[in-house]
Amino acid sequence: MIPEERSNSVGAAQKGLAAKFLALFCLLTAATVTTAPATDFKALAEQGYRWVRVNGPYATPNKNDAAKLAGAKSASTDVELQDKTHAYFLLPGMLVFVLENDSAAGLSRVRASGIVVDLWTETKYLSSEPLKDSYGVTETPDSSGLGHLGSPTPSPSPNAGQGTPLENPLMNPSPNADRSLLENQLMSPSPSPTAH
Image 1 (cartoon, rainbow, N blue to C red):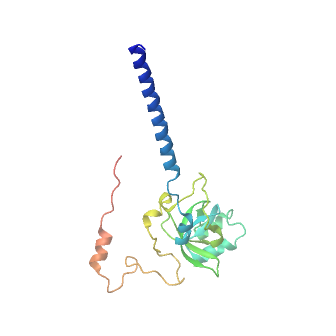
Image 2: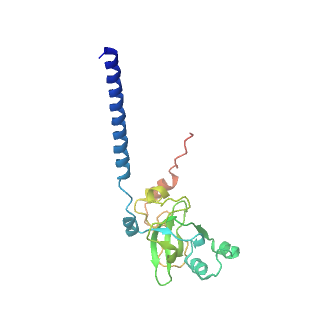
Image 3: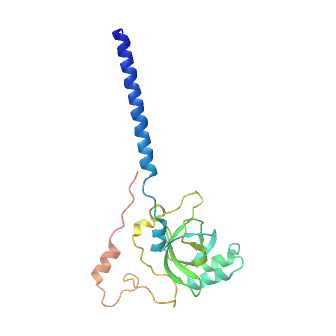
């Protein structure tokens, strides 16, 4: 064999080995990605997360108004009713966290990402089984914005005379509250957005 031919065959063998190594690496990477831990939707449901089943103005901050929406034959088309009840739109697949259930009324108080008040809606509009949103994605607490809450805690709901009001020292300071703590919380600057 001529030395030049031998060096070409060695180079070809090395290229073939490199291609095999690259293919094996790609297969291992794909196997690792596909066996990555999946979201435990059952555990999320046990924690109180639910996925919305309906599309329309079926949630409101006031429990009495939620009952009016529930009783309406055409809440999705009755603009006057939507306006009077300050209705919020729910979207299919939207993830919410259930704070309270009123099984007698068939209503649930929920917290949704991006909405600053808790909302009341019919419990039948919520699913403990994961549902995909309009993009074909099943929302999780991290992807929806509810993840930063950790264990979400209830916030005051504008339900005058409805149940027990939640204690919030910033909203209803008691006479014995530490005023300096309250003032520090109220006066602390909010972080400003950074320019990108």
